[in-house]
Image 1 (cartoon, rainbow, N blue to C red):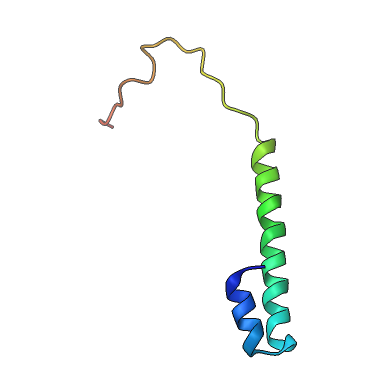
Image 2: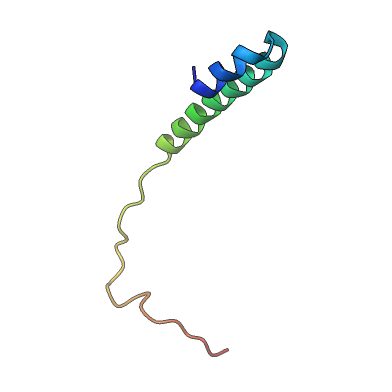
Amino acid sequence: MDASLVSAASGAGAKEIAPLLVLRKAMDIQEQSVLTLLDSVPQVSASNNPPNLGQNIDVKA
């Protein structure tokens, strides 16, 4: 538990602390879900294009 929540708990009742704890738990679950999703994305491999491709940009239309 965070020190900020402990200090808030000392001066407030359970009704004020419960939503904070639920929000914190929801944020932790969301963080884990995002990390799992990012881990599931395949790594980008190097392209097999020749080195001269993609070096110049044609800005004339």
